[in-house]
Length: 311
Image: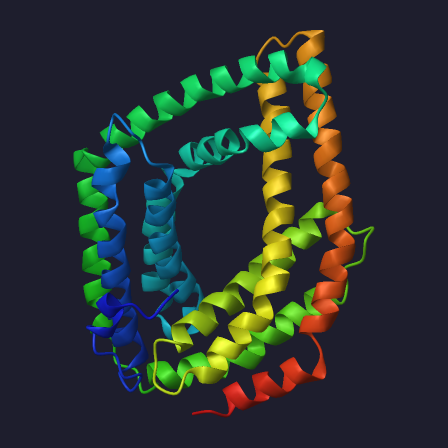
């Protein structure tokens, strides 16, 4: 998350009551998401990046909401979490299909040429699915239900901003730094190369939470240490992200294999791909283990202590 001009014009100082600052940021990111809707609805020259950026903007709101959970009245937190999650889930399947189709060249290179004809047919069927889901999203964005859901979200933001709270936005973010970091350390110390895939997925989610926290800190004055933290986290996050991509692709391949009356040749092609992806994941497990050890070193611990005391 860069400190772009559109964020700077919000004039956030960090001294605002935490829920007031949340509402300001949330409205800003929701507007960013809505700006992607027209691009995502284009029938011709559909740009998969539009749906991706739409989802990123929603994810930033949900990340901030999750980080500040303890500052919200429980009913308001639950309501916002429900509404935002519901809206975000509408694009899940389309995004999965977009990413799967975007890996075509990588998959062709990963398996023997004898499987390419089956793979070509598979991608053709997935392409048809993508068009169907794209149409669904076009209809969703234009629907009264979507407009109603957005109105409910705006109303919830407004209610949140009126809550009394003594904590400032800056104070809350800095208090969260050691808490979120320690959860990463605790999770990472239990992982080795024999750990189940879901353990790496859980570590990825913990790291993503710290990344968003560091990005929100960068929007405040005196943010140099937050930039340094994000740089330290980036390599580990990239490895975990790649690992997760392989997991999602494997799940999609297995699902597609079960979804259609697949021929023996298609089963062979899918099996060849899933085995290749599993091998790549096994290699990544070792890299992630080393990457975590480097991230959890004394230099990072010192930086975390400095950030948590920078109030």
